[in-house]
Image (cartoon, rainbow, N blue to C red; front, side, top):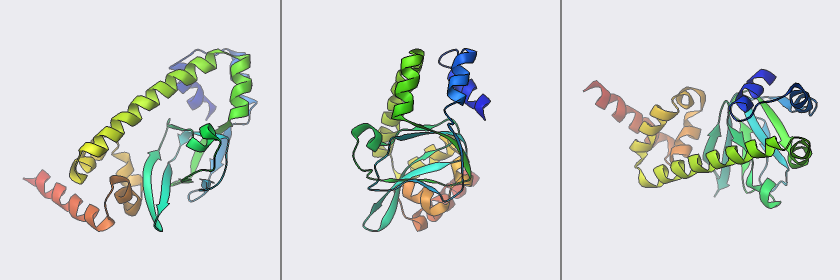
Length: 193
């Protein structure tokens, strides 16, 4: 699993053996079972996550109903807002599948960044990429119909259709599970025409 992480980092910066060993020594790698909750609403945390294998999701409980706002799969990173603003979390983060993730915290990051300043450069680059991606996703969600959102999902993240339970997928698309079933049928009919 460390090779997956090192290959990902290599897209941004080159690592020396000392830097690789420093990362390995942090005990970042964790196997987490499907259904495990990494972060609870109301919990304070310093932990950030990077998915090496598997799928995790971010969701809120609104009026007793789960509202999924994001899925993170291979090579996706998540730093919950509560890490940045040092307040209790407003949402949950849990595993949709058995997953292998790295878990780092702000103290580790400060230590690594002080020893190896180029990690800070990489983190800034990743943050800029993530911010741009999230803005595009938000704009697409706000300006599209449920059918367009579903078609975008099929085009951009088709793996989620197989990996994620239908009720979570429906919530992510901003619709009810019954509406997703009807939407899927409509899209299938159109594709046959």
